[in-house]
Length: 205
Image 1 (cartoon, rainbow, N blue to C red):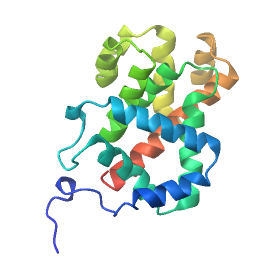
Image 2 (tube, rainbow, N blue to C red; image 1 turned 90 degrees about the vertical axis):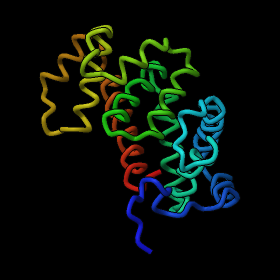
Image 3 (cartoon, rainbow, N blue to C red; image 1 turned 135 degrees about the horizontal axis):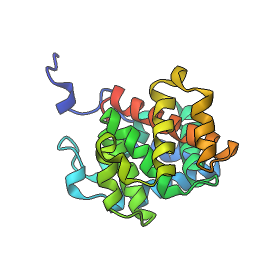
């Protein structure tokens, strides 16, 4: 059967059933299980308008992602644990990392990731005004504190044009007070956000 507009009909891969996802999750690391609890909180906080028309509910949209990832159980366990650890752990504020990830999601046009990271930032009590800056980062980035703007610019470049990152870029972050560990955390946060956005876009989730 020919599908003229696949973006209007749903994901390009059939998701595994919820019970299959749950069976995989039971064997996953604790970080993956904790991240699923976070996912349920995020889905519960989504607004109806955030959900594409091709999905009936927030839960169907959100769990389509995990259902598709569950086709590769070991990857599911690793990725889901990684996403949880990257955003929950480390020294950088989780709310800021969610905003950084939202910039990357907006750049790519990954609606599920935009909704995920924006709602997750709301759970961290991030000022809603900052969401507007994230949506128009290039135009409004100067409204952010210098250290946050520099960190997000660096993180975006690390996933969009990593070969263009220079030693001077790293030194500029250090001048803003970021440590080596912070810079690694920024880079891994950006890489994780980009990976999930690319996955969602490729399979039209």
